[in-house]
Amino acid sequence: MAGRLSFCVFILWIAGNDPKVKKWPIYLCMVAQVVVNLLQVVIWTAQCGKHLDYIWTPSKVSEVGQVCWNVEIQSQFGYFSGCEFDTLDDIRSITDDMQPSIRSPIST
Image (spheres, rainbow, N blue to C red):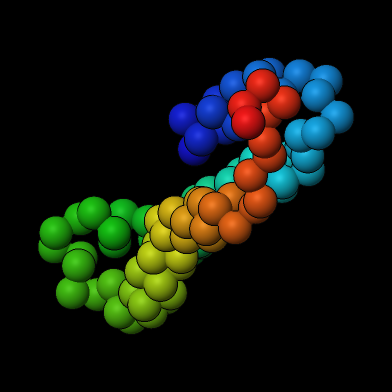
């Protein structure tokens, strides 16, 4: 998370005060990154309630299904949080390719 956020801050720094650069998508990605990662922590800590030791104690692994949430909840959210920004980045790359190119006044 920190790597992606620092990259977004770097992009904002490079953009500076350029009015041509839309900064709201960068801020949106930053907020979404923080929200998704915090939600991942909440799901991880809430899945077994007060019995977090069931997650990593080998002798209690067999009882996880009785105490904790369904493991599909965490795995599906993990897939979402892991693929979320890769997919968004791919979509952004595709839409950038569809933008008309701007000719420089120097080139003819």
